[in-house]
Image (cartoon, rainbow, N blue to C red; front, side, top):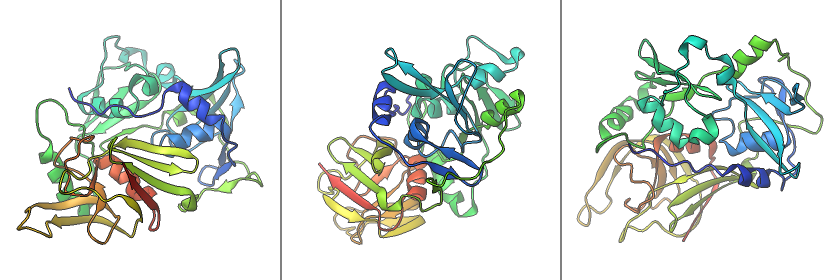
Length: 345
C-alpha cells in the first residue's frame, strides 16, 4: 500500500523550534480566543490549523496541572520532558475519551482512503491508534482515532468549476494499491474538540482581544511569507518567518526541461487551466483542467496540482513544480501575488 510519508518534524524537533521564538499573540475573531506561545507554534506548524480548526478556549490548566487548549477538532496539551528542560505540545486523547464503547475495536486499522490521509498527516505520532472499525453513514465513512475523528467522503461536493479536474483526478490514479494523491476535502477531521467541551461543560465564551495581539485576517503576515523549492531534495517549504508551515515533496523539471533557478514572485493565481507544450515540435504534451495554479514566471513555470502521477520526489515534470492536489490547494489559498519563490539546488 503506497502512502505519502509524513514530513512533520519529530516531536523533539518541534519543541526545540518552539522555544526559539517569542511569538506575538494572535486573536481569532471568529471564536473570540487567542493563539499564544507553544500552542500558536504547533497550530501554525500544522498548516495554520488545517486539521486542528480554530481555538475555542484560552490556554488553561487541567486537573493534572498541564496547560491545555481546546480547538474545534482536537485538544492540545503541553507538558515538560527531560525533567522540565523541554516543553512539548501534543494532541490530547479526545477520541479515546469520547468514542462509544460499542464502537471500540482493538484490531482496527484505518479505512482505505483514510489510510492515505492518516499517513500523510503524521500517522500514529499525530493521530494515535485507530480505535473503531470504519463506520458507514450513507456514502461517508467515519473512524475514531485516539486524538481525532476522521471522515472520508466517497461522494464529496465539488465546486462546479472543479468538476472536470476532479473527474480527471479520479481516473488519474494508477498502479496497484492506493495512490498518494488526495483531493482536498475528501477526508477531513470532525469537530471532536467542540464535542469534548460540550461533554465537560467547559466555557467557550469569547473574550476581548489582548491589546498586544494581532487580529487574524486573510492577509496576516503576508509580508513574512516565502516559498523555497529545493531541486536536489525535491521539496517545497512554505515559511511564515521564522516558522515552517508546510513542508512536502514535489516533482520538478527533468533533464532538458529543468526548472529555472532563482527567486521569482508569484505573479498570477489561476484556479483551473489547460497546459499545452509551447514547443510541440520538441515535445508535445497536454494537461487539461489542472487545478490550483500559481504562476512563477511569465515564461511558463507554475506551482500546481497534479492528477496524472504520484511520483513526488522525482524530477519528471516539463519545468513546472508539481504538487499533490491537497498540498496545491493549501498553497493556493495561502500564497499571495508577490510571495517570493526561491528555487535553488
